Image 1: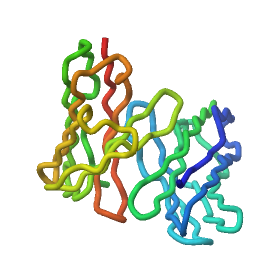
Image 2 (image 1 turned 30 degrees about the horizontal axis):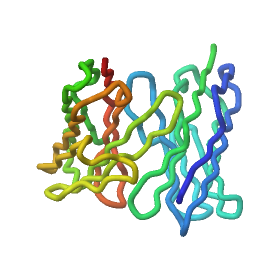
Image 3 (image 1 turned 90 degrees about the horizontal axis):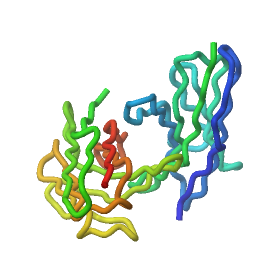
Amino acid sequence: GDSVTQMEGPVTLSEEAFLTINCTYTATGYPSLFWYVQYPGEGLQLLLKATKADDKGSNKGFEATYRKETTSFHLEKGSVQVSDSAVYFCASRGFQKLVFGTGTRLLVSP
Amino acid sequence: GAVVSQHPSRVICKSGTSVKIECRSLDFQATTMFWYRQFPKQSLMLMATSNEGSKATYEQGVEKDKFLINHASLTLSTLTVTSAHPEDSSFYICSGGRLQETQYFGPGTRLLVL
C-alpha cells in the first residue's frame, strides 16, 4: 500500500538557519502531497500542498516541490524562526485517504 | 480557515467503561469525516472513514464493534470506545472535509484508560 517516509527528529536549529526535512513516498498512481504542521496543544494544520509533478507548494516561507522522478516532497525554509518550532507531517493522498509519515519535530532556539 | 473541534480534549476512564468523543465542524459542512489514532512518536493511523448518513468504513485491523462511529449530520461525528481497556489509551484525532478536498483536523482527544 501507499506509504510516506520522513526523517526522524528532532531537528534542532538556531534561529535564521536553513531547514530541510526530507520526505519520500510510495504510491500507486499520482497522489497529491501535503505538509501538515502541529503546534503544541493544537490540531494539524495544512501548511502546503502540491497536486501534480513539478508543482511547488509554498506558505509562510516554507516550500516543497513534488518530484516524481525521486518520489520526494522535501520541506525547506530559508530562515527559521523560534515560532516555527512544531511537529511537521508529510502526507500523501490517493483517492481518498491521507497517509502520514511519522512526523518530524523541529526545535528552533533563539 | 475551517475549524474542527473535539470534545473532550482529555478523558480518563476506568477499564470496562465506554467513552464517547465528539468531532464537530464549526463553520463548514463535512460530508466525510476521518478518525485517526496517534501513538507517541508515531504517525497518525487512519481508523475509519465516515460519510454522513451511512455506515463507517473501517481500516483493516480496526474492530468496528469496539470503535463505534456515527456521522449523523454534516457537522457532527462521534467515536465511542466501548468497553475500553488500557491498550486503548491513545490520542484520537478527527478530520472533516469533502471528498478530494482539504481535510481540516481537530485538536485531538487524549484518552487514558486505567
